[in-house]
Length: 333
Image 1: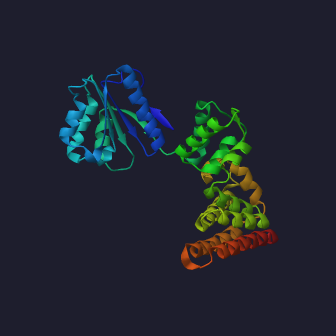
Image 2: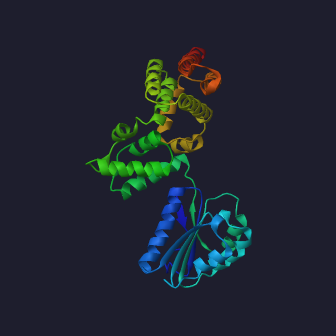
Image 3: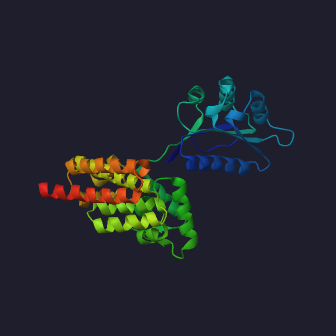
């Protein structure tokens, strides 16, 4: 998640660089430093600004204190958008902030503003990395977030939440906060997660895909009609089918390797609980069948994006084609 390279000491006379694209973790790192500084000096003035709007005069004024408060907490967001002419001024201040300045610099990652990042690195500025989490790391975040909310996740509840809501940390944190607020029990089961969040529109496409890959054609068709009737966009279904087949194809490629379930999940890009489902589904598939099904889904995806006037018919047809490919695989083996 995020790692801090310096600990202890005053928040003033110091600079923190928060670097990376994960906005929730970035906001929390900034808030933690600001809270620490305000606790240390409650009368400090908090100034928030963005790189694109910052001039040299603005930076000098913001970082130098004011008549109203000699101590300043300056949070400068999107430093990637700073004018290059300001890089040296900002880097020098970051390297030696005055004893009455708490400076927080925020960079969203990427190559823009690399010259400033290089200067800050050479100056030894404290840095917090907030990289986007890989899918197999998300359950760790969910478990930590649950503990901080006073919840105990039972069994596969963390994986179930990731499966239902995806990998967006802000969404997952909000979901856990909702569970903590709405439930009487501190213990959260996978069934409770499904009850609360299994009806989201973006989830319904994956329910269709799961049924199709498992060989349950009747359920896939039933779930498709229900999903479309309750607002799921046809393209969400075709995207879920394509993703499910790609993951199944990867599993078929990797299953003979000497990987444990965690390493397989990491290589495929799924939560660890999904590996058992892929293992079960793979028994009636081979690579040729997966390739045939992916081709059919690609045609269906084009249809639902405008090549066909009847998206529902196109999706029903592709479910039949997927099932035919799966059954043909069974006959060949």
